[in-house]
Amino acid sequence: MRPDQNPQIVSPLVSPSPPSVVSRRGTSIMSGSSDPRQPLVHQDSWRPYHRITAKICHSYLSALLLLVPIGFIAGILGWPDVAAFLLNLAAIVPLVSWMTLSLSELSASVTPLVDELCKATLGNAVELTVGVIAVARGQVRTAQSVLLGSTLCYLLLVLGSCFFVSGYNKKKLAFDRTLTGILSSVLMAAAVCLMIPTALAMFLSPGALSRGDITHVTRGTTVILFLLLLVFLFFRLRTHTSFFRAAPTGVSTQSPQIPAVRSWRPAITLIASVPSIVLCGFFMVGSLRGFSKSTGISQHFTSLVLIPLVGNSTRFLSIVTVDRDDRGALGIRAVITSALRITLLVVPCVAFLGWIVDVPTILMFDAFDTVVFLVCVIVTNSMTHNGETNYFEGLMLVGKYVFLPFLLNEPLF
Image (cartoon, rainbow, N blue to C red; front, side, top):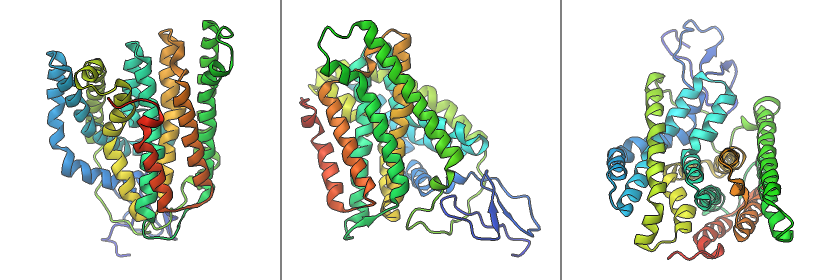
C-alpha cells in the first residue's frame, strides 16, 4: 500500500482479511501503515440497509418534511380530524427515516449495549410514542393494536416480501438456520410470555381473577419480558457475538469508502426528530376517533394496519430492497430482530407505563388477536428453523397479512 492511500475499511458483516484489523469504531488499522490517522466511520454505516435508507431519504422523503409543521398547525388549530390525522401520519414517515440514519451514525460513539437499546426504543418511535400516548389517554385498545400490528407486519408482510423477492427465480432459498433458529426461538418465548395474562383470562372462570390478580399477572409478565431481554442482550453482545457478526450469503467483501460523518449533524437531527414524532403521535392519537367516524374506517383497523404500515414504510422498503440482493439472510435477521425489539422492550415499556397509571389490562389482548399472533409466530418459527424456503411460502405470508382484518374478525368499514 502506498503512503498516500487510505487503508481499506472492511464491512462488519464479513470477516476481515489479513493483515487488516477493524477496530470497534470502524477504523481500519493496517500493520505497517504509515498514516495511522484515519477518519472514524461507524461500522453500521457500511450495512446495505442504511445505504438504501439514506438513498430513499435524500431522494424521495425530503419534501415530506414540509408536512411536519403543517401537521402541528392542524393539531393546534383544531383542523378536521381527517386532515390532522393524515397530515401527522404522513409527517411521521420522513421523521422515522431520518431518525434511523441518525441512530446508525451516532452509535459509533456509544457502547454496543446503548446502541442496541437506542435502536430498540428510538428505532421503534412510532410504536413507542403511539402506545405511550394511547395508554395515557386511556385508549388501551389502540396501544395494543399498534404494537400487535407492527409485529405482524414484520412477520407476515415484510418477511413474506423478502422470501418472494429473494426466491422468485430460485428453486429454493437457503440461509443460515443457526442464527435464525436462535432468534425465532427467542421470539417464540416472548410470544408465550405475552400470552400468559390473556390465557389466564380465557381458560379460568370469570370470577376466578380479581383486579389485583390481573395486576400481579401483568406485572410479573412485564418483569419476565425485561429479564428475557437482558439475557438476550448478554447472549448477543457478550457470549455469542460471533453468531451475529457472521457474513450473510451474497454480501460482497468489498465496500466503497465514504467520508467520515460529523457527529453533530446526526445529533441535531435526532434531537429535532424525537419531539417532532412525539407531537405528531399526540395529534394523531387525538384525532383517531374522529378520523374513524368521518371516514367510516374501523378504528381498530387503522391502528392495527394503517399506522404501523405507513409509519414504518421506509424501513420495510429498505429491508426488502437489501434482501433482494442478499438472497434472504440479511432480511430474515432484520425482520426477526425488529420483532424482538418490539416484543421484548417496547411492549414492556408500554406495560410499565400502564403499571404507573394504574391500567393493568395493557397485556390483556383480545382472545382472537392473541391466537392469530401466536399462529403467525409459530409459522415464522417453523419456516426459519428449516434453513430454506421458497417464494410460494413468502406469498402465503403476504396473503395472510392482506386478509389480516378478516382473520381478526374486524371489518374494514
